[in-house]
Length: 475
Image (cartoon, rainbow, N blue to C red; front, side, top):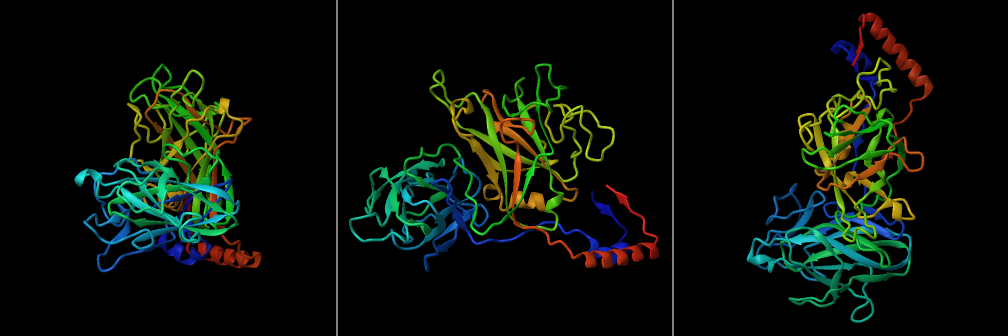
C-alpha cells in the first residue's frame, strides 16, 4: 500500500522510501532455446546507414511514420527508408540491420522472416525484395550460402521462409533459407536493402525440422545477460461473460480463463489476471514476460476441423489504483482483508465496456498483442505455452513502464480476443494439471539494506515523525 505523507515529513523520510522499478538497457543478444530463436525487428543489435543518400532501417512509428500502409505488425517494426529510387544497398553492403543470436544447439537452421513492403508506389514492385545472411558464415561461391535474396509483395506482414542463394535478380526462387551451424556461439543475422520500402517485423531462426511459424508467431526470445530474479504466480484470476443470462455470474473457481469475441453477442468473454508485484519495488527491470498455458482451443485442428486458425490476443493493463481490489470469487477476501465486495462479473469488472468486446481506454492501456497457434491441447503431447514480453510491447517499453509506474503493488492484466466464436482459454491458477498464469521479471532485484542501516534509518525516521507529529494514512 502507498503511504501518503505531508511534504515536510517526506524530506525527513526520503531515505526510507521504497524505490519503484527502473528500466535499464541491456545488450541485445537473443538466446536460442529448444532449437528456436526469435527476434523483433525494432530490437536490433546494430545498424549501418548509407551516406550521403541517408538510407537507414528506421523504427516505425517511433523514428519515422513509415512509407505505405503496412498492416498486421506484432507491434513496431523497421523499414528501409526513405522509400525512393535507388539509395544504395546490396547483399554485402549497407544500409543494414543486424541481430545477434546465441546458438547453444548446433544443427541445420532455417530462417523465417515476417515482412511486408510498400505497395502504394508502383504496386510494390520497387520494394518487394530484401537480402539476408549470417555474417559469420561466409565461404565464397559454392558451399553454404553467403547470402539469400527474398521476394514478397504484400503490405500485410506475413512469414516467408524461402529465397534464392547468392542471386541478385528481379525474381528470386523460393528455396528454404538454411545454414548448417556446426558449433555453439554468437552469430549475427543480417538484413540489408535490395530495394528501400521493405519492412522487417520479426524473424525466427529455428531447427529446420520444426514447423513454420504462423500468425503472430512465437514471442521474442529472452536476451543474454538478463537475470530472472522473480517468477510470480497470479494472486487472482477469472473471466467474465456477456449475455446468455450470465452477466452477473462469477467464474472465479473455473480452471480456464476464457476469451472470445462475439462483438455484442452472448458468448463474448474477457479474462482478468492480477499479480502482487510488491516484490519488484526497488528492482531494475530489463524485461518482463507473461506466460500462459493454452487449456482450450476448439479451433486448434481436429479430424472434423480441417482449417484450424491462429488467434490474436490483446493484452491490456488496468490503470494503477483503478478497481484493483476486484475479488476473484465469493469465497475470497479483497486485498485489504475487508469484507469483500461483489465477486467479479461482466457488470462490475473494472475498465470493461459492458456493451461489447472493447475495453475502456480511459481506465486501461493497450500493452500489445500475442498470438495463439492453431493447436488443440487435447491433441498434443506437449504443453502449449504462449508468452507476451516487453519486446512485443505496442510502444517502446510499454510493459516495463506499466510495471514500473505501479504504486500499490498490484498489476492487473485484461485479455481479449480479436474475432472467432470457438472456445479459447488459458489455464487459471485453479487448474490442477496445467501451469497457471506466471509473470517473470528479469534484471536486478532490489538490494536489501544491512540490518544496522535499517535500524539507524528507522530511528531517524521515528525521530522525524515525533518532531513533526507525523500523521499517515494508507491508500
